Image (cartoon, rainbow, N blue to C red):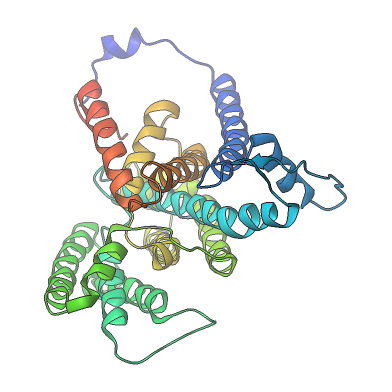
Length: 370
């Protein structure tokens, strides 16, 4: 809602240099917090490991660092250094790092879609990524023969193809000549999502014994994560984040209006295509191994925007860090709250995110966006 001149005049004026410095300090502080959260999450599990021991083990993996971690006693037994390193480096750390990558990817993709469509309800799944990935994963689970790619099963491969394919079809359907109307794109995405979700629902009704695995994949989780998955997701997410961050200034200009952005020298259609491709890439690569983790892409950008403002030069890196921290903590809670049972992390993100989002709406009496 527009504010009156009197309301604006009574607001404290914060010099730009101070605001810029505070945001830079926030980025540095969140980066340090992310490191602490990674180490803290690594200590938790069926075998509790002291924080300092975990930190020493992680630090010893750095080049030119020579540390002999102290081996603690767990349940009255002395852990050997080999077992300690296996638990920390091969079981817990890849899962935690993948959670951070997925959280960062979903948060930045959500922020990008919200700015691109100038719609506060936009999230990374708006154009059919989730429904396409869900249908691809479901087909892979029901396929009677074995498929593999780079030592991976058919599920992540089919999920990735389904996600990319759904967005590609939506883009082709919405494109009118050389332009891409945002409203048409959103409507095409909603229609495609509904169609693909209906097909997935039908396949689930005839899936028989495979139903349990399909449901768990659709709810999202980071079960049995391996380093190979991290190494595949990492370059995709980093490349997509780099492309999106490079276009932070055009995103800021496009918040005015597409016509004004065009007059200011922004090639709007080109920027749309690049940002859609980058956001789709990071979202698809993130969820193909973890399933559909909801609410991160819509909650984190709003929370960051409320605290640090809508400037995309800072909104994107801040969303990256906050999204990574949030999903690491959510996954840690999912695997430790009811041991030895694991709760799908998508349930945790919804339970934690929905009340906070409703609280923000109540406090602001609406969606704070521009």
